[in-house]
Length: 141
Image (cartoon, rainbow, N blue to C red; front, side, top):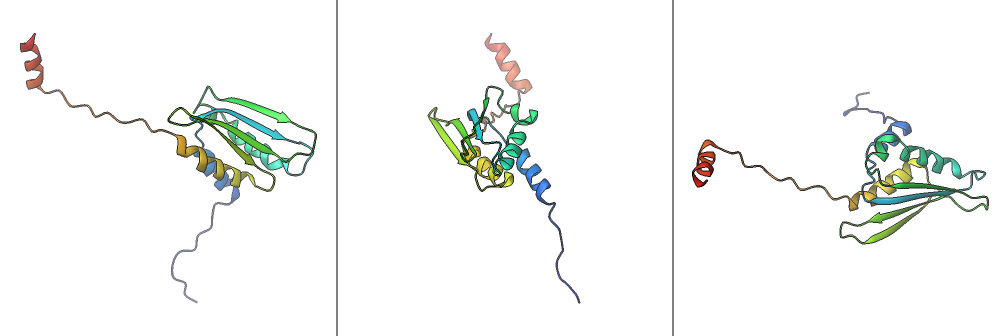
């Protein structure tokens, strides 16, 4: 039997999480609050998500971001609350309910929503200084 094309395998769940982890950028985030009940079966995924956001490379994207972890004992669903600053200076809150989501899905959602507030710095092009412009500047003085 002849098959056309290329058979590839995905890298799996761990490589997908690693890929999303490399995309995390928390520049517009002022505070992140993780809230979960450790005795709930749904808390495992948010703990993995908390680990991904605790990596030094992620924290280096915004050293002023404050992390807060609320451990509750009331059986409430796990959630993550992001306090963001928009490019126009307006404050916004993003609440992610993580009850039935995997770590990968939470990473994808947060990367999608937070990345829209990241402002890329504008590149200023430098005009090369030629001998003629240097001579003209000297003659003005």
